[in-house]
Length: 198
Image (cartoon, rainbow, N blue to C red; front, side, top):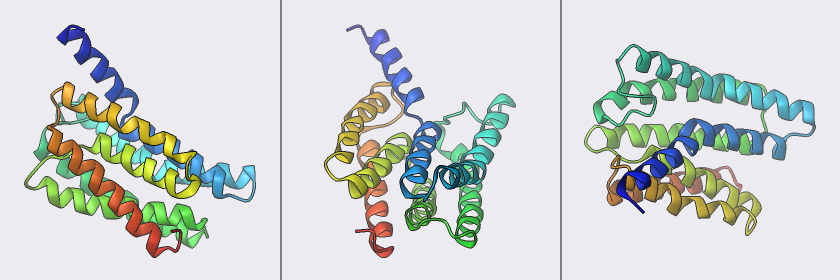
């Protein structure tokens, strides 16, 4: 396969398995898994999307269009700090809201894991860039394995795919990809353990 074709496939894979789409899928899955009814599942999905994904996505698109980010999935390490800060604020606000409204335990654990990951990744980002794409896929796969066992383990197959895509496209080194996946998975395991879900 030619280099240009490989890069196109890698970029397409990265665009499909981006942090926003992976977050959306995991929010929908967890909401429908943990809610007592379809109405409740829709309620939690809408709340989580409104506070956890939409504000960050809209701000990122706005900044990218104004030329203040190099793209929607910015690869410039120093440009990521403001996105981490915004995501952290959204995670705190979202966590408070869903706790106050009595969200299912798994949703609260997921938000705590998300906030913890934001803090850890923001600190790492001060010195080194690690892959958020694989972090979101690894965290989601870890959640699915915890909740669904062997069936959830199917999602682990996406890890080598997104790892290859991020390395092939030149956005990350193998070490940055490995660090992103390992840290994200470890944070989920710790958060779910503290919530009694493991």
